[in-house]
Image (tube, rainbow, N blue to C red; front, side):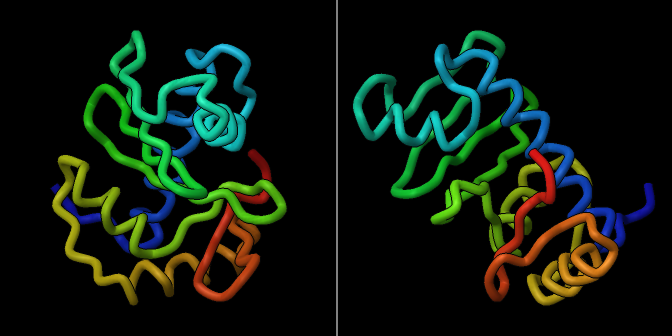
Length: 136
């Protein structure tokens, strides 16, 4: 099996983020976004850590949320001041470690790939070294 390029690795993270986020939102009553899950947990309306019916799980931390799909792929985002889900190269490399693919990309490789995807319009860099999706 061929190893992913750094850009393919970032795109895989983005796909996993969308999929896992959508699964979690669909199962947490009243949530329409990860921001909602974080705020609901802070208000103690839902648990900070939970396993959901389909095997997806989440854990709210500070201003963010770690999530894992039933296959064990982990995604982690923070919520910025504009209520966007943001991530950095460290979070992407952690995701890559949770996949079954062999990936030997450094954080610098991932950071450069994120910047390439900013240039192509696939990501936005709202502040240095932090990225978000242009659309949810």
